[in-house]
Image (cartoon, rainbow, N blue to C red):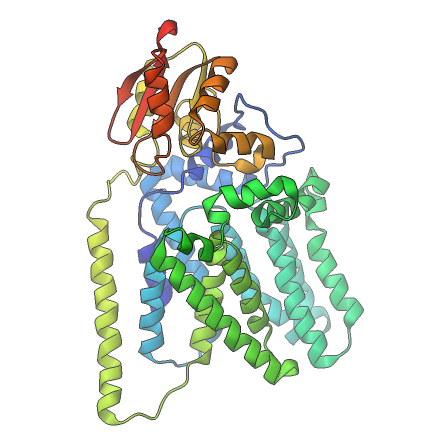
Length: 469
C-alpha cells in the first residue's frame, strides 16, 4: 500500500524527541536526578527501553531511525489491512499522503509507537473474537492477553487495549442484544493484566494519573496540562501561532471525521461499525491534546478510504482526477527528498540536544550541582551519567509544585538566582536555539558577576560559577 510506505519514508528524520535519550539511559540504569522525585513511581516503559537500547547497541542512532520508520509504516499497514480487498481511487490516497507529510514530525521514536503497533494488531484480531464460535475464540483471546501483558510495560497507554476491546464488545452487544456478562468478563480480563506484573496496583493506576496530567482534571495537574506544549489542544496551539499548518489540518480532519461519524451513528445506530466509534474517541483525544494526534491518524486514514466511492465522471474529468493525485504524490516525494539534505548522518539533532557540550562537560567536570533545561536532561544523563541532572522530559516524575516553580524561572530570573544559590548549583547549561526561553536568566547570571560562560556553540551555552573554578 502507498500510505504505509509513505509513512515509513516520512519517518526518516533525526531523533528530535529528546526523551529517547532518557529511555536509553534508563535501560542502563534508572536515572536519578538530584532534585526530588515523587514517590510510588513505576517504570511503565521498561520493555520499550530495553528494545530501543538493544537496537541502539547494534547500530546507533541511524539504526534507531530506520527502526522507527519500520514501526510507523507497520502501524499504518496494520490499520489499513482490513481494506486489502477494497478498491479505492488515487485521489484520497494522494490527499492523505500529503496530509501525513505535514504530520511527519509526530512520527517520532516514543513509547506511543508500540502502543499504536499493539492497537493495530488488536484492530485486526479483536473482530475475529466475535466472528468465531466456542473454542475457536480462545487462541485469539489468549494471544491478545499476552500482548496486553507486554503492553503494560511498554507505555501507560496500554489502557487503550481494553478500551478498544470494549468498543467492539459494545458493538457486538448492540447487534445481538445478548451475552452481556461474557463480554464484560472479557473486558475485565484485559483490565486485569497489570496485576500480573510487579507493582501491579501502581501499574494499574498509572494511566489514570497520566490522563489527569494530560487533561488537568485535578488542581495539582493543571500546571502539567497547560505548561507542556504537547498536552495543549491544537486549537490552543493554533491561537498561539505554533505548528500552524499541522494544527489547522488536525482540527479540520478531527471535526469533519466526528461530524461524518456522528451522522452515520445517528442514521443507523445498530449497524454502526465499532471502527466508527473508535474514530470518534481518537478524534476527541486529538482535539484535546496535540500529543494524541498520532492516535487519530491511522483510524482517520482507515475511515476515509473506507468511505471512498467511485464517481461517475466524464472521461476528461476522470483523466484529470488521475493526473492530479499523481502530480501531488510526486510533489510530496520531492519535498521529502529535499528535506533530507540538511540532516546530519549521525541522525542526532545536535541543536536539540547538547552533543558537543556534553563532551566538553565530561572532559571538564565540576564539583557542585548541575542545572539544566529539561530537554537536555535525558541526553546528559545518557552521555554523562556521573553528573546528576536537575530536570528531564519525564515531568510525571516531578510534583506539581516543583514543575510549576521550574516553569517560572524564565519569567522570573530573580527566583532562579535565589534557588541556584541556595541549592549549591555551580554549573548550568541552556539552549540557544530550539525552545530558547532562557535569555533573561542567562543575562541575569552574567550581570551578577558570579557566573561566566565557559563553553558556547551554535546550540548551547555552559556557565560556571566563578568562585568555584
